[in-house]
Image (cartoon, rainbow, N blue to C red; front, side):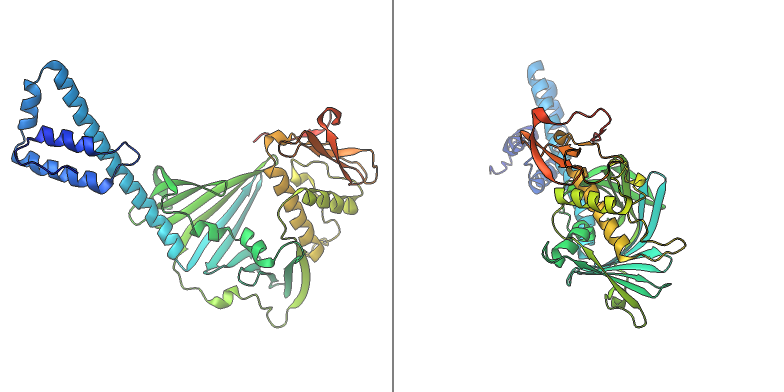
Length: 404
């Protein structure tokens, strides 16, 4: 790097410094700030030189010098702004990562449905949901155990991950999205303005992680996270999730996260697949649905219509959740996720509304996987075949894949 010549005037110093600075996008913040400080000191000693020299220049030189100075100010401002932005979100990410506890209100919103839960987190990997009505759900990532507790019924449901599918710890990790929030990179948040959250002036950041966009609101002064929002689309139904009234670092009793069944509780077992989401989940859902209702579901775009799933497993007037009901809900969720992750090129169609199980010649669902030249077709007896695109069924009444 060139050293400053005390006999060199301010304009020459500024020109030389700007020439030393690399292209935008690789601006060394500390170097620019030092250069600005040096220029400021020089300007204090000789404030009028630069303007007098510009006035004395020929018109073309004046324009060149003015543009050069403007670029220098833009580069310096860019560096300072981005340094502050990075530091601001780094403070948010650091607090999320370093805090050993988190509590928040979890709000899930679908059309005409809003659910509010309380969520508690204890590092590492312990999550507890207060579902209301004396019902609690506890996850322990270290052991891969999930327990539902119903205080009013004195009932504990232990959910087992099917071992041949995948180990329990991996399955729990896929559920425990709190861990994902805690591991955002310090530079992953992009500024998106400012607003007030629960009476606190907040900075807003957008984060892209694992194919999901999150909006994080943090105290503008301290960087403390206040709210996290994210959403997904399941068929025709948008699902919005919000972590609100976030509190970090509160003391939480480890007993709240115990997966040991309390004394005096009845126990029941339910199973959950930990395998990667795939085509088999849709087939299993269709099979379970037809077993309970004798026909396939009315829609794959609107699962709220699928009131028959789990029929007979939750008695009228009872709020107890049977293993059959929980397993059906889990299978429905996995089928929804499979459909949701299919790209637009899959071009899926569903023609199983009201169709009875058993007809091996009746296609009820078909889609194109990836860049394949064939379609996967599920028939009413639930066997699957690869069919050339030219031979894909044409059913005018078939339900179509929603646009994303």
